[in-house]
Each structure stands twice: as structure tokens, then as C-alpha cells.
Image (cartoon, rainbow, N blue to C red; front, side, top):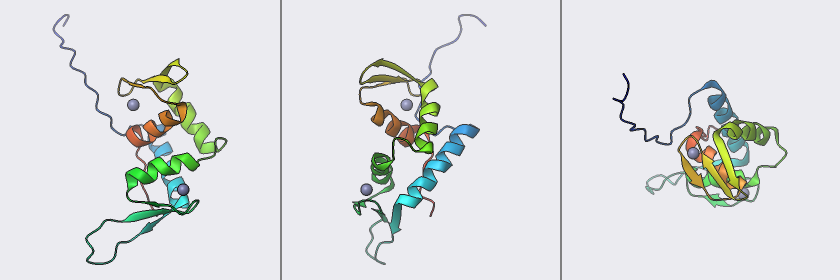
Length: 131
Ligand SMILES: [Zn+2]
Ligand SMILES: [Zn+2]
């Protein structure tokens, strides 16, 4: 089978399912649950749950915003950040001070490293609110 393969790879960002990724996703999920509280909408209001950040008391209107927001509070020296960094390292290539390529989705990320972390949390890890 040589020469017959169409190279049709178009990887979609999807949460990784290997043990390490699942583990890390769980760890980040429990971090999320310690820094935010879910607010149930008033019955019949038709609106969705919101989340209140317990650190700065801002209201995040959905999980997407909450994940993004909670990352900004995460201390640089926390064990979970160090774990996230060592998870990310083999999956990215740094090409400049604010230029990275993510091997998982083969996309350039022209942002600061902090945003690379957020990229992984948003796209490649399964981080949910579990409280
Ligand atoms: Zn906050
Ligand atoms: Zn990616």
C-alpha cells in the first residue's frame, strides 16, 4: 500500500482521552469547582445557569467564560499549572516569544504562553464544573 493514501487528516479539536489528559482534566475541573459557584436561574426565567467567581465575585455567564476566567486566577506556581505545563510541552512548538504551534490541532497560536494554557484547557482537555 504505497502511494494510495490520501492525506486527509483534518484533526478536530477534541478532548484527549488518554489517562494523563483525563486525569489532568479532572484536576482542573476540581480547581474550577473550588473557585466558582453555580447559580441556578430563577424557575421559569428560561435563562441558563451562571457561575460566580469566588475569588473576584464576577459573574460568568457560561462554562466557556468561566473556564477562560478561572485560568486567569490560577497561580503560576500551583502544582496543577506545573502539571498542565508539562502536559502541554510535548504538544507545542515555540517559534517566537508569542508564537506557538499546537500539534494537536496544527494551528498557530500567536499569543502569550498563558493563552496557550487556556487553549489546551478550552480545546484539548475535558474541564467541567462538577460541584
Ligand atoms: Zn474571578
Ligand atoms: Zn490545539
